[in-house]
Length: 551
Image (cartoon, rainbow, N blue to C red):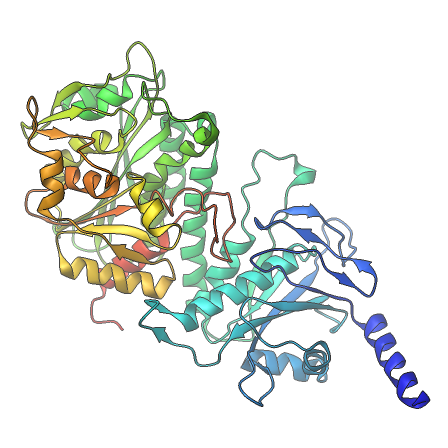
């Protein structure tokens, strides 16, 4: 018995001296203790509250870390490392597999450990659960679980190493290099612009570990960086992201990629009679702007896919002022425009062989002596009159004439509008999926497939005549921007549907996913921060439209 106790104590001492570890950040966040040492405390947002670096290094020095995946136990079988993980384990002389056994890791999705001092080159090793090996498409969840598991594991591991002060993070491909790149790049990104330099969370450099599939990894980084662009545009305070500043940011992001950006000012807007847009814009001192963006990836005479993004850079509700408690969130009402800019940037970076055009009406909705009043009526470009019954529901009003103008000017083969419109999607779907309305089953099926591959899903909502009857007819005007009844998202879609005469059309209502996700955010995104969703789904949709025969 004495020998048994002595051996156990020696084993504990060896682990304590050789390897310090802590449980990697999971969705809930927690404070852990390891052998009496207080470990870092994380909030559910992934931001630092208390940070005790496991790695002490001088400023400017390079500290390398690696993320490897481990599959969950199946029956009597132990947790199994990925192929790259097994190679790293061989390099470390079996220390990783030994530590997995000693610490009782089960390989549960998104849960893992960070081991220190295991390898001479890599100061920290994050071993993160990938869930079941061989996971594929789940019909009930409408998602490819293998791809999503790679995003989650890579994101959790990269974020854990980031919080330990690692400057260069090498990521195991986990059999899905593109998805691993997406998850890790999204997880480590932070909006740091308004923090002091010494208080900013360092964003490490990402590299692919032990895999020849560099092209797939690079594609994933392109997609993630595009979504991070949308996150930056949305998370910027309204005074730092006015319509003019947004236009300049778009030029800076797209023109180096060879994308044409035309900035239309007030004179052009008045000349082209975008009256519904001006009705809202005139309430603010900030001048309105309309952006026309053109990406030409194939023959110029080919009809483009048209993106229309709602660009209310701040939506106070106008004279129908919103409640003060959530007023700061409405800087994100330009999430549709931000997603459109980010999508075109990715299309250019990936050299997609199709033409994409975008029209982005940018303005603020503010109360003033010039502001639009409840009950005002505006005549649209198609001759119909739009009654503005509720000024806080200005999204459809802002988009009405730009939608008509874009169809007549670009003559697209397909229209996709992206907007934060109805609160109904928040109640019905939460942060799980964007609401999609479409007059084409083919277009919807393509979006559904894209969402299942990116993990950023869409869910179809009805576009029935029932809802058209709630917005038309009215006693003194043709269309009401509020309609009748509580189905706010369906009613907003019905208003826009009145303005799309015959072309294939999809409307993405992203009020629930494009702004802040307050409950159960995706593990590789941040709670109470703007998400940039569903940028990657739209990129994947464009890829499917450009390369329809590619599986």
